Image 1 (cartoon, rainbow, N blue to C red):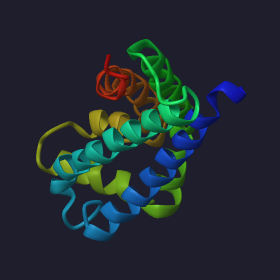
Image 2: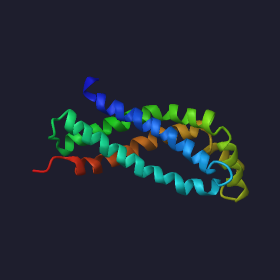
Image 3: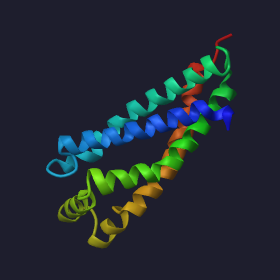
Image 4: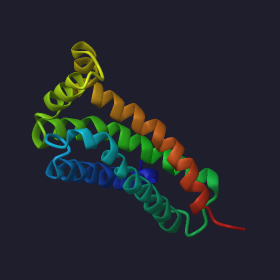
Length: 159
């Protein structure tokens, strides 16, 4: 466990930043009046996510591998970070949709159905806390592994 202290630290920071981002989205009106913009603007968090992975792997390289880290070591660290983020994701989703923006699902279901993007039943199935918890956990893991592979290439020690 001590071997993954850095990944745990950065996974917690990622999760806290995710909550801050959701507060930002709510403040910007992307969860109610401007909900049509939310699917577009929420992707901006991807920049923050990549930055967190980059900083986490630099931290791992400097403070665990004494400045010399190969791609495999970076990739494994990135996978560990992805696992931590995925495990914390349901908590982040619960806090977000219970306390920060409790009307989000009602708003997005209404928007989606009224704009004929989905039926009521489809929207209710997709836009729910359970669905978002699963999407967050599995999406975080898959995107995290891909991000880890790419960032590990950038952070590895050059020969």
